[in-house]
Amino acid sequence: DSLRAGFGVVPIKNTKMVRVSYASANPRLAAEVLNSLAQNFINFYGVDPAAGGTIYLPNGDGKVAWLDARDLGEVAARVLTQSGHESKVYDLSGSEALSTGEAAEVLGRALGKPVTYVNVPEEAARVSMEGMGMPPWYVDGLIELSWVVRNGYAAQVTDGVQRVLGRAPTSFS
Image 1 (tube, helix red, strand yellow):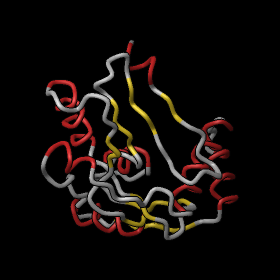
Image 2 (spheres, helix red, strand yellow):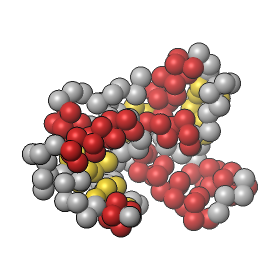
Image 3 (cartoon, rainbow, N blue to C red):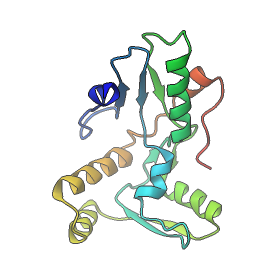
Image 4 (tube, rainbow, N blue to C red):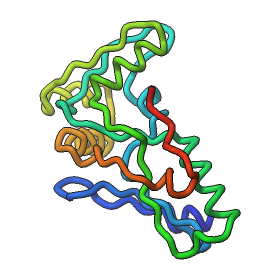
């Protein structure tokens, strides 16, 4: 409950930085995830690992510095169990910023299946999502996330994982 109580997501549209803060009643846990988790790429972008597929989003050529969820977990464990992290905040990201098309190519190579990206107009994406029965609040959130990506606000690569773990973040590839 202490983690849930401190969890906050700032509004993202028309901001200069995307920050999702994980904090708790324990002041030793403070990490800022500036970008999306790499595992969400396959979970939420509609790619069937058995067949490959095409990703249709209004992300343009914007990039994301995908953070591996395992790195996030390892950073959290280290910060909570070792001294020296009190009152510090670590901005976390992956090791490189990739466009949706570049990430799709990496995923396709890993799966041995074709995975492609088609940039679609924002309104077409909205109409398609609504046509699939997604609730308006969810569609709005996804459209805002695409806006963040498209406008370059998710591309920042940071040194937080390196500072805490003493190694580079896990690469998306």
